[in-house]
Length: 313
Image (tube, rainbow, N blue to C red):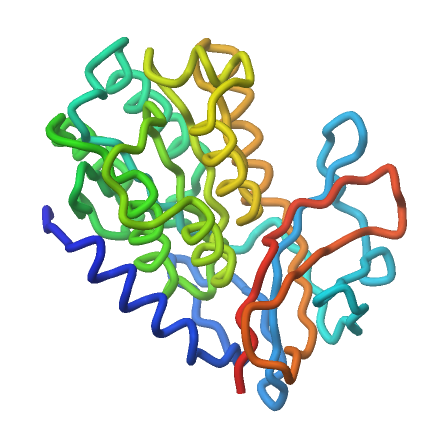
């Protein structure tokens, strides 16, 4: 299935909804074919849930922590945890967002993007997980809606075309908006791009806020001969903007220019989809965008989570 969406319409409408959207707890319904228990939070309280991944100083994922190990700061103020969940069997919904702009054929970027997409799909479980395929230039194209039939998505990778300018930031915001209703899965947007935004209306800061506010981590794989060499050397404003965007959502940025770097990055994303802690606290009574920080009481551990949420009545 192929459909085109106006990026500015999707993002503008979604940003407006966020400003008035209460974060109420609901009873979840699994989105994958096999029924799997997902986190359930009390419905009488206006809750904010935040997914967190914890690693030790060697980079190993920590799986045995409990609620007493965590501290949540909302605007710098400590919040009481009302709910705590940790499971490695929750369903995951992954949106693959592949750059289809005119620069992608350079340096074999398209071939690398297809390879990484197939590797990501191989980490998913058809019994409980779903994935979708999107592409973009200055438009956002739906090539395959969410499904557990990953063979269909693999086939769809061959339909990604190369044309036009690159509205990278707008595409990330639009895809995050489309993934937002996958509320009871572990969600992620996986971006495969040469990293050069040339036509977005939205800034990286704005997109980071949109994706962070709905707790959708964004993982960026920079491929091909575009920004990858400069990124690998830690250079360039685009690098810092993309990295900031990804990490503000609880995701990350990877330079995917060798087989080892690709394998390591795919493994890292798979670990983080499976080994999450989900923490819930009562939303602030003060409306607006709230700064969010999750820490552990063990300073040697590093926590990855989103940086913002939207508080509303």
